[in-house]
Amino acid sequence: MTRGLWLADMPLVLASGSATRRGMLEAAGIPVETSPAMIDERNVDDAARRAGAAAATVAALLARAKAMEVSARYPGRLVLGADQTLACEGRQYDKPANVAEGREHLAAFSGRAHHLHSAAALVKDGGLVAETQSSAELTMRRLGPEFIDAYVTAVGRKVMTSVGGYQLEGLGSQLFDRIDGDHFTILGLPLLPLMGHLRAAGYLAE
Image (cartoon, rainbow, N blue to C red; front, top):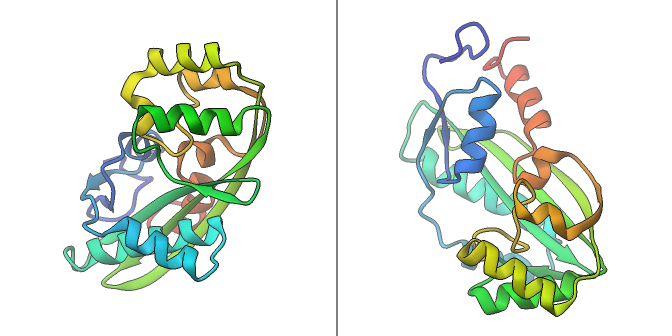
């Protein structure tokens, strides 16, 4: 643990297997133990959308549901749930189900702006400690079918591992003309406001 910065006796429990989120937290001096949530994300997502929830709200509901489920298995521990959703021109998108769908998503985003919504929820003993959400707007350049094919061939099955079909920290940077928003939000965690909540709750040094 990073003594003097992280004030709790035990690491933060991350309700996710995401290496990217874990890496962001650890780089910020927050010790992490991972325990992926055992929820049916699609059921939560579908119910929220049927109720007319916006993409940002869906991300917040998923983050909270993940944290609550893991909190039930880790009494006395602080648990972090996180999720990210994408919306483009009124339509919400999930992670591509296969490589072909990844191509379709990239073609749909080509020449358009889309929004990433990242949410986080902190839970302890089934009680909500804090939650936060932030958004970013990304404008994709116009992509020809040859470039999309070359990109998908280069990244392979990674096109299925994130909403939008890209990782901005890798080859995904070649897809964009403009990005407006926080880098951590784009990677899937509103890290700066999250750390503010951790400080306010006494888990991080002021």
